[in-house]
Image 1: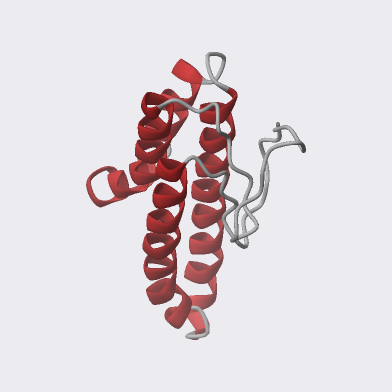
Image 2: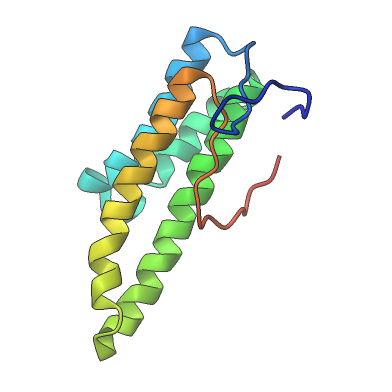
Length: 130
């Protein structure tokens, strides 16, 4: 995204050119994390499909889609690591905290997307870059 974009009081870039439809689509990209309730390990497919469909039409959607996919891949990796460490009981608290962390971050990202803000998930490995 462009470094000349305005920055709000939270220190987030605001894409003033993002349309209401783009903001709504980006919001649903972040909310696609809820697909894990139904699809479990296959839920990563939902934001990938949504991103691939619209990424070339809107830089705003492309940015939010990359961020949502990176976050979900990171969550999968963290869950696998916590699962491995749960064998020696160290990972059990993390297995319980990861879904709570994911839900809180997803809601914050969806709200930011709906406001026209660009959002960066904390502790996310950036596999896809812009």
